[in-house]
Image (cartoon, rainbow, N blue to C red):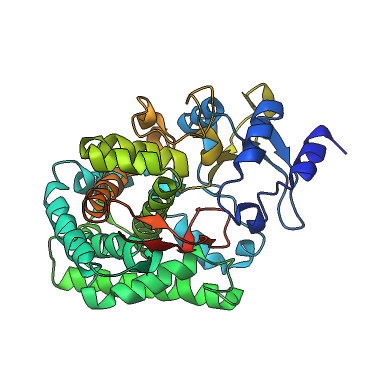
Amino acid sequence: MTQSEDIRTRLGFNLLDTETFAQGHPHQSYDVLRQTLPVLRHRGSVSQPAFWALTRYEDISAVSRNNKQFTSTKGFRLATDRRMTLDPEIGRNLSRFSIAMDPPEHTKQRAMINPSFTATALKSVEDQVRKAVIELTESLEGRDVVEFVSEVAAIVPIKTICAMMGVPASDERRVFTWTNGIFGTDDPDFALSVEESNRNYLEIFDYGLWLLGERRREPRDDLMTLVATATIDGQPLDPATLKGFFSNMLAAGNETTRSSLAGAIMALSHNKDQRDLLAQSPELIPNAVNELLRFFSPVIQMMRTATEDVEVGGQTIIAGERVVMLYGAGNHDPAIFADPHVLDVTRSNAFKHLTFGVGIHHCVGSRLAMMQLRIILEELIRRFPKFEVVGEAKYVKTNFVASMKSLPVRLH
């Protein structure tokens, strides 16, 4: 048994097993690996080859920025073995989104949608989000315990991204169910079988094409009209690219933001001094948003593949080998963040977190996500300053996003 296998076995650390993340990020394991094997050789499985896992901030940042020696076109996330059995069409469509592209293709697709996510473009969206959050928090008045994920955290992101993309309000529930299904491919509560997972993806692909067709016939001021009428190098987007764009944008705009909101409430409830500080000094909330994103780290991992032999953290990665970047580990690296396991809403360098990625693949919707998180914290803390979690969080079975199924919260 190699040193890597020995330490990984003793820790019970297996990135291909969703049980590793049954309670969120395994920070104790991350800490041990960062100190002993920061560039970990992780064994594969019957369906996947071995790969490397990174736990240091600087290594993760270096690989993320190095799009010449690392490609995103061979997969942008580490799949579980079950997910590997999905219909190949799903992978082909998902790979036609910018997150799975390299320059120059990546640059061209990002340029198409970047204007919709600038600070100026989001000013009008902010007013809509604020109105929706105020209505939501008002509706909670008089309640004692709420199921925060489904009643609060899921509502704002799905309404926001659907409005931006032009999805009718009447279809929000369908989109919510689909995104649960595609993120929960390993969770029997969301997909009892691979066949059901396939159906979830194929249905959302078909819906996306239908909506794009509607926007070609009747253009509106939304993202789907922009994409439906866009051209790259003088050519309209092909069906696979259109499917990949629709499904990826909806999933990213919904699930990761929902996870961030639930994670923020849980973190503040477990650190009531920080919750009370924000209630007393709400001007700290914008910085607190960055600290909460660092502390909770909604995305577990992203992946790249080496295009040539390259050294990372003193280890040689051979061309064709995969490298998995563990964001939660990087965001708790003491070399960058002092007392990383302490939630400190006044932390001066919280903005350095890796949560949205770095380099060319930095999340296009980061401003939108942070704006939603800021607004819901402002309104929730103003109305219910002593909110607290009163039960255990239940996590979705996945190795990709630290997503919760439920989180009971008392409002007072």
